Amino acid sequence: MDVISIDGFECAGHPGEDDIPGLVLIPAAVRALKIPVIASGGIADGRGMAAALALGAQGVNMGTRFLCTREAPVHDAVKQALVAAGERDTNLILRSLRNTARVFKNAVSDEVVALERRPGRRRVRGGAPSRRRPARTGGPGVRRRPGRGWCPPAWSSA
Image (cartoon, rainbow, N blue to C red):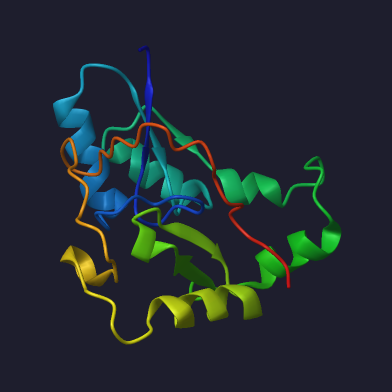
């Protein structure tokens, strides 16, 4: 492996199950690894990029930021909704399955959150409702999930 991308808890898509933010995860990964680290999650402008580089990352991923560019083949209404959104306009869903996804907040994702918070579900470490035992991790923010090929979109419209 030549390089690794580290996703802090702030990332869209799959932020992992340990809820470790990039400010903690990036320097920990840089210390632990001998290969270049690319920082991902919550990096939306030059200030975020400078912070990631100051923490030791050799580069950054800016997925949602570039999703909103003219060149991205995404409907303008989606781009406008993302640009207008604030830092509290996402939901974390599928936590009960230990396959957490950060998605754009809408009626569908609100309903998923409500279903996952139903009474009778056992709570596991980190407060995520689950009926399953927590999976083991390989260190801070590292999660091995063999056989998991399905990945929900980082946002959806309802």
